[in-house]
Length: 141
Length: 107
Image (cartoon, rainbow over all chains, first blue to last red; front, top):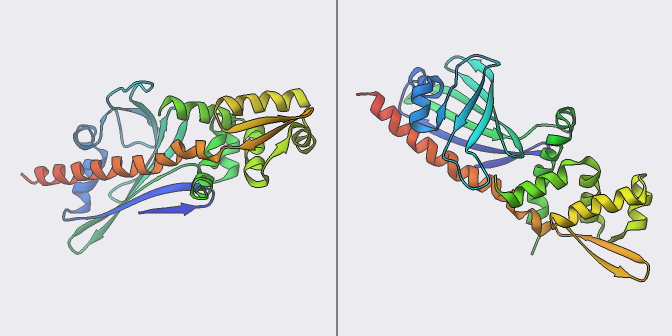
């Protein structure tokens, strides 16, 4: 379910859905439908559009996820940034038609390289670090 | 997303502090003196960085004579590693909801 890419971690989930890609695409890109399965939002399927996901606030977190649309390739690929306290990451959806419907791949990853994190500045500088965490923590005990 | 992680994030946001921590993780215990020599920054600056790391519980120290020795505490990174498992559970649950929604869209 998970894999390591470069110096950062990527969470990957794949599912086979018995529905046509066009329908899955609608569920991923229409604000009112997104709200039904993911979170309240002001999403628009336009590259560059800044929006927020809103979930229930918990102590120390207001429940807001700051996002920006990065990629919109209709019925095939959708990507947006996913920013919470101390963490800047990217969510990418890839749809592939299959005989029985749609193969959905969801990737949630941090920044891909030293360069990009350095570019983003110290605020996000630690993101590279997260890729090394598993090794460090895995080496315990 | 929680306060303990937030402290770790802040401590590791600085590239020098991150480098100090990585060095301690890889090479084991180091004196402030040795660290100062490695990083080409002043000793007060190194000490300040070490204090921030100490507050985040990422390092611990012991005094021996006139030297202070620092050691990494990699276990304190565990909350960050939980990030993966938390989001794994989160997205699987949301994808279940997506599948339910797709069923309802048929009607």
